[in-house]
Length: 180
Image 1 (cartoon, one colour):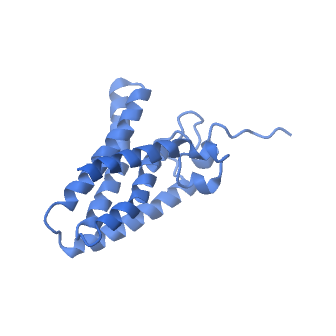
Image 2 (cartoon, helix red, strand yellow):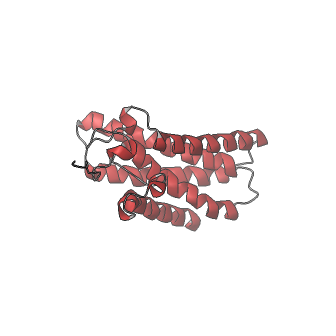
């Protein structure tokens, strides 16, 4: 239980820092691959995925040998990708507006649910090995999709910055147009 609480705290702190890291590093594109570069829903998914993936170094060492590790990690990552937009678009559909405090709460709720699912799956009976193989492929696809969608965001609401109405790096609100 202590490890679960520590994981939620560490992932939450790193995720919160990664919300601002692109600006702190003066718009470093490498940092932008892993941190929020605009205010789109996708970028908020990224700042929960990045620290969860980083935390894999720690929990991977701790749970080395547990046959449920990869399925647990895959499900925890998948929950971030699914829950963040579901909760955000769900409440904004109902309230007809974006509420800053709910946005923040959703971020932390998603991390808690993601980590809880990880620890729950880690503590059930061993799953068949096929689930580990499929989960490794799923984790690889999530990470690959993560990079591709950051560099070449699709033109959909999930990737559209609500402030600038643009996508990806070009959507950052501090990007100034050069005057000739």
